[in-house]
Amino acid sequence: MKTTPELLVTPAKAEQISSLIKAGATAFLIGEQKFGLRLAGEFPKEEITKAVQLAHQGGAKIFAAMNAIFHNDMVPELGSYLSFLKEAGVDAVVFGDPAVLMEARESAPDMPLHWSTETTGTNHFSCNYWGKKGAKRAVLAKELSLDSVLEIKEKAEVEIEIQVHGMTCMFQSKRSLIGNYFEYQGKTMNIEGDKKESGMFLHDKERNYKYPIFEDVNGTHIMSPNDVCMIDELGDFIDAGIDSFKIDGILKSHDYLLEVTRMYREAIDLYMADPDEYENRKDAWVEKIESIQPVNRNIDTGFFFKETVY
Image (cartoon, rainbow, N blue to C red; front, side, top):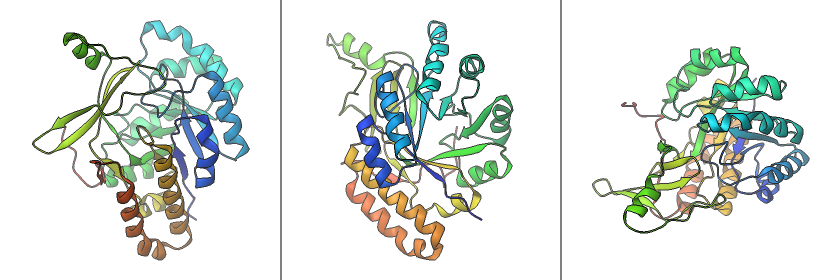
């Protein structure tokens, strides 16, 4: 019997959670920038507490991101932050650095852990290794083909999460590359913790691609020129038992995120009930998403149907 996958969404504010639950989201990824990478919004402690309350009232889960790149100066803060997340009722912590796992054993020993390194979740051996260390779930790299994802799921001993919609990260540097460039030009760029600079792109004239670029406390991030959209290709993932589908809302409006969440909810539920009808309707969802895409931002299938070249 097929199991309905979790629909994981990344909101920008706690106030958005209730409406996203009504739209069909069943889990949310939130956190503070200094602990988590490329979050859709900044959630200080009071906002995390509020988000947990709203999510649990609606029968949804809250996952807190602790997958940043941690240097020595941040390690002493991990234990107290994990203790806070446990006390706040967070349902799981997403981590990449083993330091988080080690601290969790002391500060939050019962906290479920989701292993997410952005790039190295590429085989079932790694997933199972971290499972034996205490991770309940592995978040797979975005550069995998559909066949690779299905093979990993078949052999994995932990839950598997994949991204099915939204932009992905192509490059990150801990350095303030944009800020340094502005300084070189004799200008200044104000970086605030609760919002990202909008309208900044790297422009590839040859391909006419525009790569969104922003800077936060974790450094400089260059994002993909297109959004992944797999709403018309969910069947194989559902049949394989993929546990969680993620919609990434970074740099997207709340209205856009709501509409996309509704469509994925409809698509998942319809495939579970009637796969043939899903096949009949899936092109309409794609057309609808194309109609609400931001200007100069197309959709594609990411690496799911292309061979990765490293």
